[in-house]
Length: 353
Image (cartoon, rainbow, N blue to C red; front, side, top):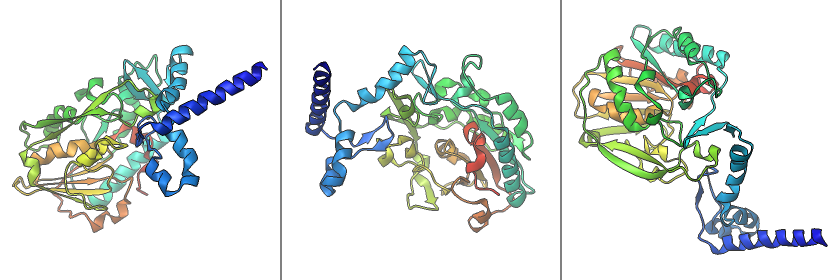
């Protein structure tokens, strides 16, 4: 009899919350799960096939249930790590461990291959963007050996620009792996000094989007961290021409991305294999080519005052062998390999053979 009462109570409990979900306003996106949810519009398209998913996705107060396991792991079992992330003082750190020696060596070989093919006689620069784990206490948390990483990367046939001392943990989003765009302003003088372009300070208008749920947010399963995203604008940016290889977006920022699954895509419209940014009013007679990952998306708009043209190439989405079809090489461009330690430690994604 007792088992029947418990079973009946459980069914009533689940049914009640399901009904509450049916009569509540639909949620379009789950930032905790980093995906779009099934809504009533989808349900109307195909009721029989979508009803079960709809009930699950629109389950009343679903975030609280999703969060329970995270709470149990961190607060009851006292585990430092959950879902490959650390949560410390409302900052989400993605675990980066161990250092993949094979991957680092492969990355070095790939960068040298690109340089030898396209820029044999040019000054090439490279820099490593540390992940947030760089700022963790390595005695308490698992992190990669950044000293070994830097030492190994000295085998890249280029000039190293040390940016690690330009940043601290407050320069990163709380819920995302990336640097805040405004934090890049501290690194530009270092880049200018090493590369040799003419730096002068620029005034920007701050545009704030809040709350921002970054890519790490879903892994931490925490709903009480409210981040903000700032994108910087000024009049100089209005006179640029932006061309993507795979889409027609022609602006530096796509504000329609704000509030989507990944609001960081506001910068240069998100992932893109090949982008050209031309400054129509510049007479610097200077061009920059950046081989990069997503970190450079927020940096590039801030380099516009110093170059006539900036080309961004993401070799995770385009094979380096076809670049000669798109690059207009003149042996005068500044060339920068700018990669995060996370990509260097997983270099199989870079399409260089």
